[in-house]
Structures are given as C-alpha cells and as structure tokens.
Image 1 (cartoon, rainbow, N blue to C red):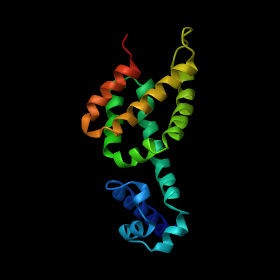
Image 2: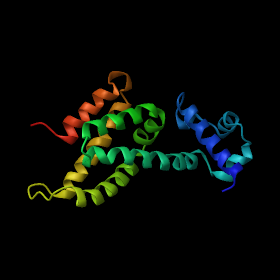
Image 3: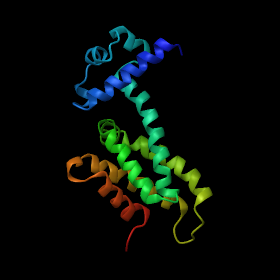
Image 4: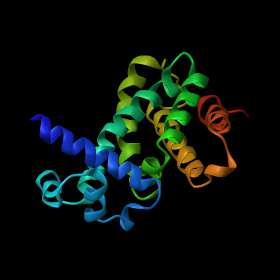
Length: 176
C-alpha cells in the first residue's frame, strides 16, 4: 500500500476514535469524519464502503491487542498483573471498546478469544478430569468479556484496578 493510502487510512481511524469519544457510531456521518480527518469525502469511499467497514478495520487491530493482553490473564504467570494491564488498556480506549463490546461486537470478540484460548489451553493447562478443558476455556473467556462489558457500562463506578480485582476473583481464581 502506498504512503498516501496508509496516511489516509490512519487519519480516518484516528478521527473515528476521536469522534467516538463524544458520540456513538450511529451519530457520526462520513462528512463529519472526513472533515475531522482532513481527507476528501471521496477518499473515504476509496478505502471503505461505510463507517461499519472502517470500524471493522479498526477493530481488527484492537482485537489483536486485546487478545495479546487477555491471553496472559488465563495462562500467564502474573495473572493479576495481566488483568490490570488489560483493564488499563480497555480504559484508555474506552469509547472504541464500548462500541465493540456493548453494541453487538462482543460475540465476535468472544469467538476469537475462545479460539485462541482453546489452542493455548491445550498446551498450557494440565488435564483435569473434573472439569472439561472446553468448559474451562468457555467460562474464562465469557467471564472476562462479560465483566469488562459490564464495567464499560458503569465506567464512573469502578476503576481499572477494581475491575482487575473482579477478574481475578471471579475468573482467574474464583473463591468458594
């Protein structure tokens, strides 16, 4: 991809993230986005079919970042630190994650997370006869994504550190 295309795509992605700080995706127009990005209206349509297409492109990178931070939550040595790192990342990109997790994108993220977690689980987790591996992965993935989704809807009520504690107590090492 040539440098102009890369620059335009980056400007559009940056502008979308900035606009998402103030409003939902459904409230953003392509004209508003292109004005904010400093690119031509027609340029947008050379790259994307619509705002949903741009969001999918942007979310692909975000999901990769999420998975890189989330996998140590389930399989790492410092799971508490991983939980805090994940929550800090989500907090710093809150509007994007509100859009991705609470407006229909959560199912896609859960599926990608579950696929990657299943592959890792086969290598990392010792076999336990009492709980099937597939169920352990399903519960861990679902629990982590659902706790984060819940938090995003209540941002002012809990800090990233508190939510990391919830993840630790409810997903990493549930207490009886």
